[in-house]
Image 1 (tube, rainbow, N blue to C red):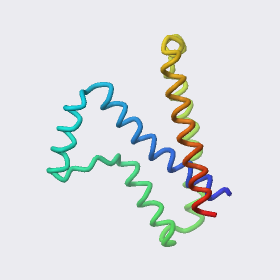
Image 2 (image 1 turned 90 degrees about the horizontal axis):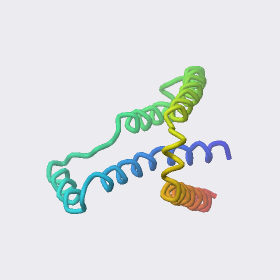
Image 3 (image 1 turned 180 degrees about the vertical axis):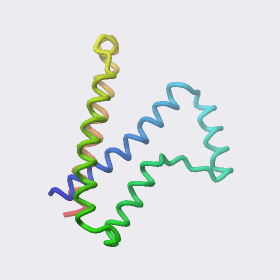
Length: 130
């Protein structure tokens, strides 16, 4: 269960990148601009993958191939846990409660949609992996 929870957590982070990317485009650009930009990127062979996603997959491969020893793995996990706590605190400190309350319905619907997608993804992964 612990391993599956970690995989789901990582998948959530990867999907969060996609959600932020898509909503950023939707908010700032028209459909025609988005389609034109995507077509241009495809023609150029340009793929937008954040550096930390690439680093994550490289690190997973190194740990899976036993290139990195277990003791280093445990140290990295401890550092990762501490950095995650700091990152979550930083996100919380940036939230403006007044602006959040002004958003009201839109934010609630977004949170409901993301939460629903996470639950469906978790159930699908559990069904596939079990």
